[in-house]
Image 1: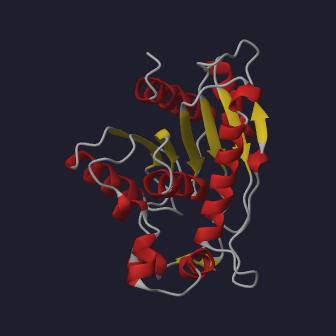
Image 2: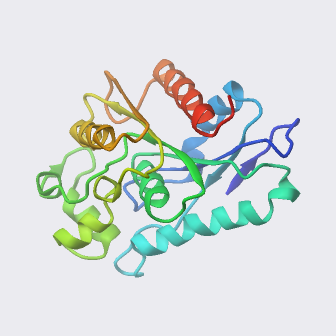
Length: 240
């Protein structure tokens, strides 16, 4: 991972873990640099850990659990080196697309120390047969083939529900802010709407912001996304 440390950091400096997308089977941390640079500009007293993780692979038996372990390994390193890095124990996590999903499922199920989540057009429901059974022309693949690599098996309602943020939230879940393009052709926007509705029903702090965009945001939208995400994180990391 790349660790970005502000010059004037101290024991109160928060840190955000950043997770890239790529359908769980590709991508790299450098693809998040544009968001990282906006965060550095808009939130000058914030540390950032922009990480890689192993790709899902049937051939190499790398699936959900292994990817969760990679994220947790990065978190443990940050925690153990907190004093050396000169940062606080106030952690947030964010990700885009598959990275948004990984950020949510990790914080909802594996790490109660995460204070809040920034979900940027990440899928929240793997147990979505309509999505699973669709062919995506933008990816040139069946969604089901991609999810099979990630989960480690073909359609199984129990297994797919187990790795779905939508099905793992409860009234004690971490505050979550979500951003989605209303024209997204890869991750259906209704997934974020359903997630928002369930979080609302459970009285979990959350926000949903939609933009007239596809599966990416333009420069102006990205600036607005980070502005809203930072404001949300400052409140829920008790920094205001």
